Length: 246
Image 1 (spheres, rainbow, N blue to C red):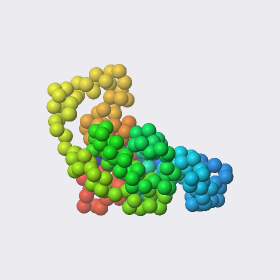
Image 2: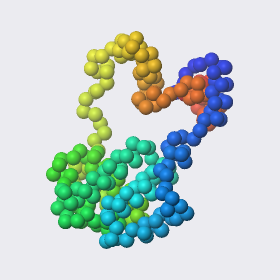
Image 3: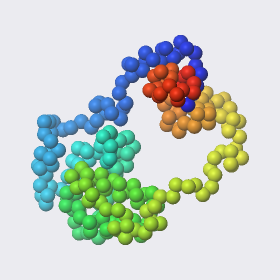
Image 4: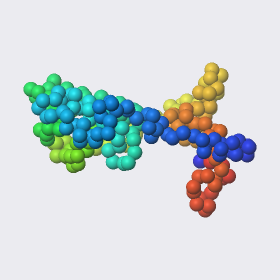
């Protein structure tokens, strides 16, 4: 997307970009601090200290979360803090629910998790009428857990657990137009009203309206840093449509 700002601002942004620190999601300072006793040891060596059947299962789960929860399940990158929190909360609840809701007498060690456990919890989710998107997310979190333990392919497709297509297929198309315009709301009038209370919030709303940014993108947008000349975009010359880009 294009935007116009004074040329002297562009030159200043170019210098600032060279000094900008790494993304918080990838910064080593943002990674969980390992206990001192884990120093120099591989995940396998750390897990070997917790013998199945002797170590408390939920303790083993916490070790797995601390070791691997920053990892993406498919790509070589870290995941957001939101994803880490939601995945950790789900896994803790999943193992508690095996006993409290699925009827198992004991909570299994995560390394001994079996297909019967997943089958039982899927039945619980069906009884609770969870949304298809929620079920997909839960199975994705379990795939991540299996991957941490080297069990790639352990979590099967939803149909293997007796889920019908309607119970796990995401429905992306909206049933009705939820936009402000469709609801008869005057966008510019609302933004102008907001600006009278807080011009920064109003500016963020204007960015979302004009440039199609999502809320987080708009809130974090910094023109002095994020607007740059075309030469810095890395795009081929035939794609140039403006001199400066956000």
